[in-house]
Amino acid sequence: MNEWQSAAHASAYLERADRMPHRSAGESTLIDEIPREARRILDLGSGDGRLLDLALRARPDARGVAVDYSPFMLEQLHARFGSTSRAEIVDHNLELPLPFLGTFDTVVSSFAIHHLVHERKKQLYEEIWAVLETGGVFCNLEHVAPASPYAHERFLQAMGISSGEEDPSNKLLDVRTQLDWLRAIGFADVDCYWKWRELALLVGHKPTSA
Image (cartoon, rainbow, N blue to C red; front, side, top):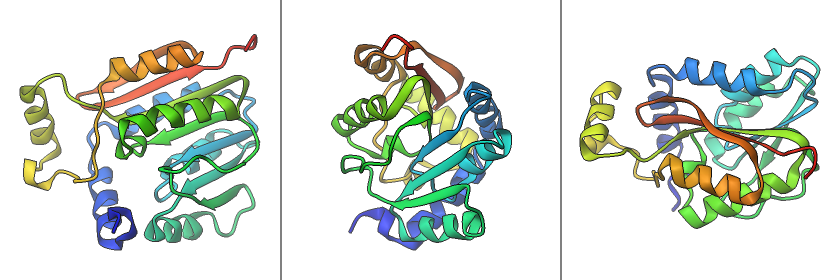
């Protein structure tokens, strides 16, 4: 059974994510990259909806689409957004190609895509390019591979966990490879806009000439 079908696994993941040092700094940097005039925001691997909630609060004229497939996470999303028409909730596994959802001026993700195998990560980036409107932005706040075993050990210490407590669903990839993928797909102004140890914000824009 996929780990994300387990309520215990999903709940434990949220608990760890809530304890991430400097997470709010990464989220604030991501929100700053969302265009002021944003109208449709797609959140991939929404979890409990924390990031999309922040985005919609910061961009009150926007509407959101939250994508997740963990039963536990979907319950959290309905609890958070069930009373509002500003967010549509879509049950979908990111291991599979994205369903038709329309186009978006902003696509975001927070600590989700690193659970996919590397080939699927790259395919998903291509699918994101396809649903982004020209002038749109993709912001991926992500858990990335460390540069060395020492760097990884320091990250675990900062997180207050041991190697045996790491998420077994992690499939970490380095920043450079992912930025190179985004550039090859056609994204512009691609860079790592924020980083703390193994947490990084990867950003790319779809040029108006695309």
